Amino acid sequence: NYIYVKSLYFCFKEKIVQTIRFFYAFLDDGSRCFICNKRSLFLPVCKSCIKKFYSVENAFSLNRCMYCGKELISTHDTCMKCRENRVIASCDYVMPLFSYRLWNKELLYHWKIEGNRSLSSFFSSLVKEALLKLNESIIVPVPPRKGKIQKNGWDQIDDLFQFLEKMYGFRVLKILQRCSLQEQKKLNRQERLETIKSAYSLLPEAAFRKELQKNKGILPEKVCLLDDVCTTGSTIECCAQILKKAGIKKVGVITLFTVD
View 1: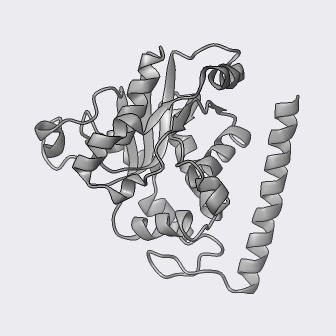
View 2: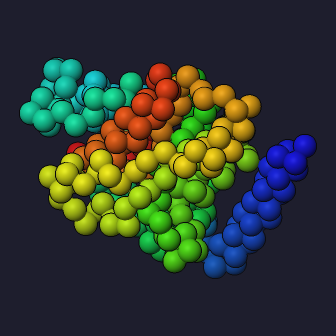
View 3: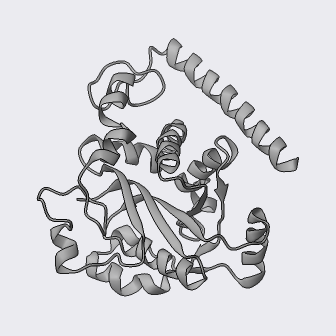
Protein backbone atom coordinates (compact mmCIF):
# COMPACT_ATOMS: atom_id res chain seq x y z
CA ASN A 1 0.00 0.00 0.00
CA TYR A 2 2.84 2.40 0.86
CA ILE A 3 4.54 1.72 -2.49
CA TYR A 4 1.23 2.23 -4.30
CA VAL A 5 0.67 5.58 -2.56
CA LYS A 6 4.20 6.72 -3.44
CA SER A 7 3.64 5.79 -7.08
CA LEU A 8 0.28 7.55 -7.12
CA TYR A 9 1.85 10.66 -5.60
CA PHE A 10 4.70 10.59 -8.13
CA CYS A 11 2.29 10.32 -11.08
CA PHE A 12 0.11 13.12 -9.71
CA LYS A 13 3.12 15.38 -9.11
CA GLU A 14 4.47 14.66 -12.59
CA LYS A 15 1.13 15.54 -14.20
CA ILE A 16 1.14 18.86 -12.34
CA VAL A 17 4.73 19.58 -13.42
CA GLN A 18 3.95 18.73 -17.05
CA THR A 19 0.90 20.98 -16.98
CA ILE A 20 3.01 23.87 -15.65
CA ARG A 21 5.68 23.25 -18.29
CA PHE A 22 3.05 23.17 -21.00
CA PHE A 23 1.51 26.43 -19.72
CA TYR A 24 4.82 28.30 -19.64
CA ALA A 25 5.85 26.88 -23.02
CA PHE A 26 2.53 28.07 -24.46
CA LEU A 27 3.03 31.59 -23.08
CA ASP A 28 6.61 31.71 -24.32
CA ASP A 29 5.68 30.26 -27.72
CA GLY A 30 7.63 27.10 -26.91
CA SER A 31 11.22 26.03 -27.49
CA ARG A 32 12.66 25.06 -30.86
CA CYS A 33 13.37 21.51 -31.99
CA PHE A 34 17.09 20.69 -32.00
CA ILE A 35 16.67 18.77 -35.25
CA CYS A 36 14.34 20.75 -37.55
CA ASN A 37 14.12 24.09 -35.66
CA LYS A 38 10.31 24.01 -35.52
CA ARG A 39 8.38 25.02 -32.40
CA SER A 40 8.18 22.09 -30.00
CA LEU A 41 6.52 23.30 -26.76
CA PHE A 42 8.56 22.26 -23.69
CA LEU A 43 10.48 19.32 -25.21
CA PRO A 44 13.59 20.15 -27.28
CA VAL A 45 12.36 17.76 -30.00
CA CYS A 46 9.10 18.16 -31.93
CA LYS A 47 6.55 15.37 -32.38
CA SER A 48 7.39 14.77 -36.05
CA CYS A 49 11.12 14.35 -35.30
CA ILE A 50 10.37 12.06 -32.35
CA LYS A 51 8.35 9.86 -34.70
CA LYS A 52 11.06 9.94 -37.38
CA PHE A 53 14.26 9.63 -35.33
CA TYR A 54 13.25 8.04 -32.01
CA SER A 55 11.33 4.96 -33.04
CA VAL A 56 12.09 2.03 -30.73
CA GLU A 57 10.54 -0.26 -33.35
CA ASN A 58 13.15 0.89 -35.89
CA ALA A 59 15.94 0.50 -33.33
CA PHE A 60 15.05 -3.18 -32.92
CA SER A 61 14.98 -3.78 -36.68
CA LEU A 62 18.64 -2.83 -37.26
CA ASN A 63 21.36 -5.37 -37.97
CA ARG A 64 23.52 -5.30 -34.83
CA CYS A 65 26.78 -6.70 -33.49
CA MET A 66 26.03 -9.85 -31.49
CA TYR A 67 28.29 -8.66 -28.64
CA CYS A 68 28.10 -4.87 -28.24
CA GLY A 69 24.82 -4.21 -30.06
CA LYS A 70 26.21 -1.50 -32.34
CA GLU A 71 24.72 -1.17 -35.82
CA LEU A 72 26.66 -3.15 -38.42
CA ILE A 73 27.71 -1.79 -41.80
CA SER A 74 28.70 -5.24 -43.08
CA THR A 75 27.14 -8.68 -43.24
CA HIS A 76 29.34 -10.03 -40.43
CA ASP A 77 27.79 -10.80 -37.04
CA THR A 78 30.35 -8.71 -35.16
CA CYS A 79 31.69 -5.18 -35.50
CA MET A 80 35.36 -4.43 -36.18
CA LYS A 81 36.12 -3.46 -32.57
CA CYS A 82 34.66 -6.68 -31.15
CA ARG A 83 36.58 -8.73 -33.70
CA GLU A 84 39.84 -7.05 -32.69
CA ASN A 85 39.33 -6.70 -28.93
CA ARG A 86 36.08 -8.00 -27.50
CA VAL A 87 35.27 -6.15 -24.28
CA ILE A 88 31.70 -7.33 -23.65
CA ALA A 89 31.56 -11.04 -22.81
CA SER A 90 29.27 -11.37 -19.77
CA CYS A 91 26.15 -9.64 -21.15
CA ASP A 92 23.51 -11.87 -22.72
CA TYR A 93 22.49 -9.04 -25.02
CA VAL A 94 23.20 -5.33 -25.43
CA MET A 95 20.48 -3.12 -26.87
CA PRO A 96 21.54 0.50 -27.49
CA LEU A 97 18.51 2.40 -28.76
CA PHE A 98 20.18 5.23 -30.67
CA SER A 99 23.57 6.39 -31.92
CA TYR A 100 25.44 9.06 -29.98
CA ARG A 101 25.83 11.37 -32.97
CA LEU A 102 24.67 14.76 -34.27
CA TRP A 103 21.75 16.17 -32.26
CA ASN A 104 21.76 13.24 -29.83
CA LYS A 105 24.93 14.64 -28.26
CA GLU A 106 23.21 17.97 -27.74
CA LEU A 107 20.09 16.30 -26.42
CA LEU A 108 22.05 14.30 -23.84
CA TYR A 109 24.01 17.41 -22.83
CA HIS A 110 20.71 19.27 -22.39
CA TRP A 111 19.51 16.46 -20.11
CA LYS A 112 22.63 15.69 -18.07
CA ILE A 113 24.41 19.03 -17.85
CA GLU A 114 21.71 21.64 -18.40
CA GLY A 115 19.32 19.67 -16.18
CA ASN A 116 16.29 19.61 -18.51
CA ARG A 117 14.31 17.06 -16.49
CA SER A 118 11.42 17.06 -18.96
CA LEU A 119 13.66 14.74 -21.00
CA SER A 120 13.51 12.14 -18.21
CA SER A 121 9.86 11.53 -19.02
CA PHE A 122 10.61 11.35 -22.75
CA PHE A 123 13.55 8.93 -22.39
CA SER A 124 11.71 6.75 -19.86
CA SER A 125 8.86 6.22 -22.34
CA LEU A 126 11.40 4.96 -24.92
CA VAL A 127 13.09 2.64 -22.41
CA LYS A 128 9.68 1.34 -21.32
CA GLU A 129 8.94 0.27 -24.92
CA ALA A 130 12.29 -1.50 -25.16
CA LEU A 131 11.83 -3.31 -21.83
CA LEU A 132 8.41 -4.56 -22.88
CA LYS A 133 9.79 -5.81 -26.21
CA LEU A 134 12.56 -7.68 -24.39
CA ASN A 135 10.12 -9.04 -21.78
CA GLU A 136 12.12 -7.54 -18.91
CA SER A 137 10.50 -6.64 -15.60
CA ILE A 138 13.46 -6.20 -13.21
CA ILE A 139 16.03 -3.50 -13.96
CA VAL A 140 19.33 -2.58 -12.31
CA PRO A 141 20.80 0.90 -12.71
CA VAL A 142 24.46 1.50 -13.38
CA PRO A 143 25.17 3.57 -10.23
CA PRO A 144 26.32 7.18 -10.41
CA ARG A 145 29.63 8.47 -9.11
CA LYS A 146 29.58 8.93 -5.32
CA GLY A 147 28.56 12.44 -4.34
CA LYS A 148 27.15 13.28 -7.78
CA ILE A 149 23.55 13.61 -6.59
CA GLN A 150 24.60 15.71 -3.58
CA LYS A 151 26.73 17.97 -5.78
CA ASN A 152 24.37 18.37 -8.74
CA GLY A 153 21.08 17.87 -6.90
CA TRP A 154 20.04 15.01 -9.16
CA ASP A 155 21.25 12.18 -11.40
CA GLN A 156 19.72 11.57 -14.81
CA ILE A 157 19.68 7.77 -14.48
CA ASP A 158 18.13 7.97 -11.02
CA ASP A 159 15.46 10.29 -12.47
CA LEU A 160 14.85 7.83 -15.30
CA PHE A 161 14.35 4.99 -12.82
CA GLN A 162 11.85 7.04 -10.84
CA PHE A 163 9.63 7.08 -13.92
CA LEU A 164 10.21 3.43 -14.78
CA GLU A 165 9.41 2.29 -11.25
CA LYS A 166 6.65 4.62 -10.11
CA MET A 167 4.90 5.43 -13.36
CA TYR A 168 5.38 2.23 -15.38
CA GLY A 169 5.61 -0.37 -12.61
CA PHE A 170 9.00 -1.96 -13.32
CA ARG A 171 10.90 -3.40 -10.36
CA VAL A 172 14.13 -1.48 -9.70
CA LEU A 173 16.94 -3.13 -7.74
CA LYS A 174 19.75 -0.75 -6.83
CA ILE A 175 22.16 -3.50 -5.82
CA LEU A 176 25.34 -2.06 -7.33
CA GLN A 177 27.53 0.72 -5.99
CA ARG A 178 30.17 2.93 -7.55
CA CYS A 179 33.49 2.74 -5.69
CA SER A 180 35.58 5.09 -7.81
CA LEU A 181 35.18 8.88 -7.74
CA GLN A 182 36.91 9.33 -11.11
CA GLU A 183 34.76 10.24 -14.11
CA GLN A 184 35.00 7.52 -16.76
CA LYS A 185 34.37 10.01 -19.60
CA LYS A 186 37.76 11.62 -18.87
CA LEU A 187 39.58 8.34 -19.56
CA ASN A 188 40.56 6.87 -22.91
CA ARG A 189 39.64 3.32 -23.93
CA GLN A 190 42.73 1.66 -22.45
CA GLU A 191 42.49 3.61 -19.19
CA ARG A 192 38.84 2.63 -18.84
CA LEU A 193 39.68 -1.04 -19.31
CA GLU A 194 42.48 -0.87 -16.73
CA THR A 195 40.54 0.95 -13.99
CA ILE A 196 36.99 -0.35 -14.44
CA LYS A 197 37.42 -3.60 -12.49
CA SER A 198 37.70 -1.74 -9.20
CA ALA A 199 35.13 0.95 -10.05
CA TYR A 200 31.97 -1.02 -9.15
CA SER A 201 30.84 -3.64 -6.64
CA LEU A 202 27.76 -5.12 -5.00
CA LEU A 203 26.26 -3.24 -2.09
CA PRO A 204 27.46 -4.33 1.39
CA GLU A 205 25.65 -7.47 2.57
CA ALA A 206 23.05 -5.79 4.81
CA ALA A 207 22.16 -3.15 2.23
CA PHE A 208 22.10 -5.79 -0.53
CA ARG A 209 19.63 -7.97 1.42
CA LYS A 210 17.48 -4.96 2.21
CA GLU A 211 17.28 -3.99 -1.46
CA LEU A 212 16.30 -7.54 -2.39
CA GLN A 213 13.20 -7.15 -0.20
CA LYS A 214 11.71 -5.37 -3.21
CA ASN A 215 11.79 -8.80 -4.85
CA LYS A 216 10.55 -10.71 -1.77
CA GLY A 217 14.15 -11.25 -0.67
CA ILE A 218 14.87 -13.44 -3.72
CA LEU A 219 17.79 -12.91 -6.07
CA PRO A 220 16.22 -12.76 -9.56
CA GLU A 221 17.32 -15.13 -12.29
CA LYS A 222 17.46 -12.37 -14.90
CA VAL A 223 17.79 -8.58 -14.85
CA CYS A 224 18.33 -5.77 -17.30
CA LEU A 225 21.11 -3.23 -16.72
CA LEU A 226 20.35 0.33 -17.76
CA ASP A 227 22.75 3.17 -18.56
CA ASP A 228 22.59 6.32 -20.65
CA VAL A 229 25.60 5.86 -22.96
CA CYS A 230 27.75 2.88 -23.95
CA THR A 231 31.23 4.09 -24.91
CA THR A 232 33.72 1.22 -24.75
CA GLY A 233 31.38 -1.29 -23.07
CA SER A 234 33.75 -1.66 -20.11
CA THR A 235 31.26 -0.31 -17.56
CA ILE A 236 28.37 -2.59 -18.50
CA GLU A 237 30.73 -5.55 -18.78
CA CYS A 238 32.08 -4.93 -15.28
CA CYS A 239 28.56 -4.59 -13.84
CA ALA A 240 27.36 -7.71 -15.67
CA GLN A 241 30.30 -9.73 -14.30
CA ILE A 242 29.47 -8.63 -10.74
CA LEU A 243 25.80 -9.51 -11.13
CA LYS A 244 26.57 -12.95 -12.54
CA LYS A 245 29.08 -13.69 -9.78
CA ALA A 246 26.29 -12.83 -7.33
CA GLY A 247 24.18 -15.60 -8.88
CA ILE A 248 22.05 -13.86 -11.50
CA LYS A 249 21.95 -16.13 -14.54
CA LYS A 250 20.99 -13.72 -17.30
CA VAL A 251 22.02 -10.07 -17.60
CA GLY A 252 20.80 -7.96 -20.51
CA VAL A 253 21.62 -4.32 -21.17
CA ILE A 254 19.73 -1.34 -22.53
CA THR A 255 21.48 1.98 -23.18
CA LEU A 256 19.87 5.07 -24.63
CA PHE A 257 22.89 5.79 -26.83
CA THR A 258 26.03 4.10 -28.11
CA VAL A 259 29.24 5.73 -29.29
CA ASP A 260 30.04 4.31 -32.74
